[in-house]
Amino acid sequence: MHNVNWDALQAFLAVARTGRVRVAMAPEFASHWLGPQLKVFRAKHPQIKVHILVGTRQRDLSRGEAELAVQSPRPRQKDLVAVRIGRTSLA
Image (tube, rainbow, N blue to C red; front, side, top):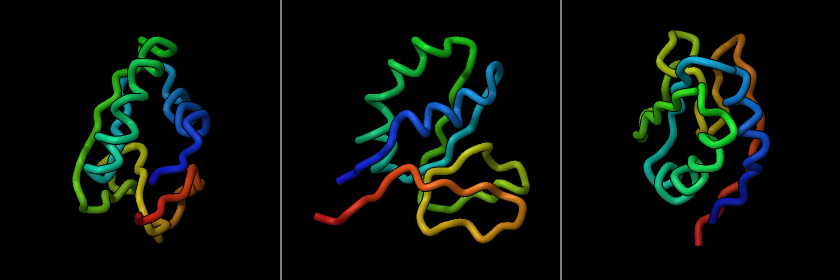
């Protein structure tokens, strides 16, 4: 079960304004949650190309592997901003 604040994630994605944003996340989250939301995001921000990096490996954002990551646990890399956008539970 995903209880996610879509508005918070959209705000992060929209910071790019134009260009490309790479978002890293687990396969389950990408298919069950993000996929259905993309149509709304693209309608609001057609100038932003979203590249979804699906996998279980955590990306190193400080090394430029992605601009955003939806992941657990909280990243330990310095100089990153981490914001909780939701909670998940196992059912």
